[in-house]
Image 1 (cartoon, helix red, strand yellow):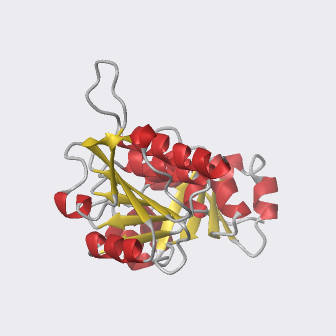
Image 2 (cartoon, rainbow, N blue to C red):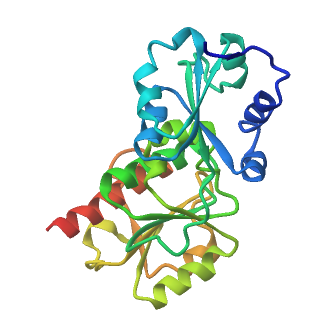
Length: 259
């Protein structure tokens, strides 16, 4: 007989509900919630799951997923409990409880992206998804950048968050200067920069800076750039969405490496 959690006063339920209230709760508990069928599948596949929360009404639907999650605790919840924990408008009936990753400053690799005050979690997640697709190795973030493990960022990452190591920096300019000293080419988007597609080859070690949605790259971070580059604007738009601009730059670096 399977025990079903039915009370919103259950201490474990209260702890799970708190995880979607802010980064401080996720850090203090050392956990985050990856919600929805795709995200739960990705979490299980990448062995990042501590527990699976399954709506008891959807038990049959997720039976195969539960069986594949070896060594993972399975909790069945009444529908109203699942809805209370869920951040989604239409809950899919499954949530993976995952360990909040340790800082990955020592394992970022050669192809990096640095986020400078990117505040929209959807943009952060989209950048991570693009990094995952384009074969980038690690993400740097300043303190003003949105949490990659917030619900909206997780959904936008489409599972990339489980494969891209992330490091949050108290002093992003200092970290970038250190990378430049190690031979990294630091590329920053700049409306007054040199033409992006006429830039010199970047080499093996690259870090692309993506700035704040409204203000762009901050002056202190811009000073760290070894190349300031402008994407062509031949139409009426004056700028691009931060994640879109980052995607263009990442894929052109990939093209360069593939050539």
